[in-house]
Length: 220
Image (tube, rainbow, N blue to C red; front, side, top):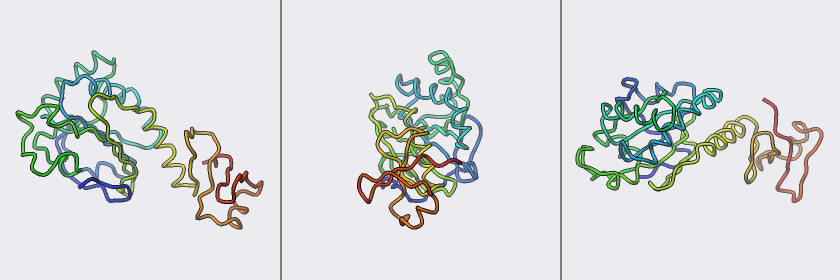
């Protein structure tokens, strides 16, 4: 079953390139990005893993941990890391799960339950649905689910933008409009009544319609 926004992210234990982890304990009080790959030594995934390594500092600023997954053993990941460095110039500076038994991929609905119990003999095409991005909050709830085809590289600058929105809206009872970027106007959440909004925003707001109330982005 595919995970949905608002559900608790399944907990699991797994071997990674940085040792064994228990997922919920590893997240702790942080946000987490879990993003998956169908197989090691694949071209698009190599570029993605390296780019994410280059963005790690940005995720650190947002109290967000990065966790990759690929349907191959950790030993293969360690060899692949050298290629990723050569291709992108970035070291693999976050853990990459070795999902050789397919358990995490099946647990997160990326592979069907009857996919077997081993990555051995499986091709990237066999695992082509293992191309998801999950954002998970400190409450261990799923905040975002995205799935991409193998041939399309993911836009991780967009993931950062969505993360900014998720963290802002969780804190300030606002929503973000189409194509919003950090620092731009936001929308007062519909659940906030006008009388309460007046206390929070004494300067008022722009309202092209009663149900859409624009204000400057709240300060942290």
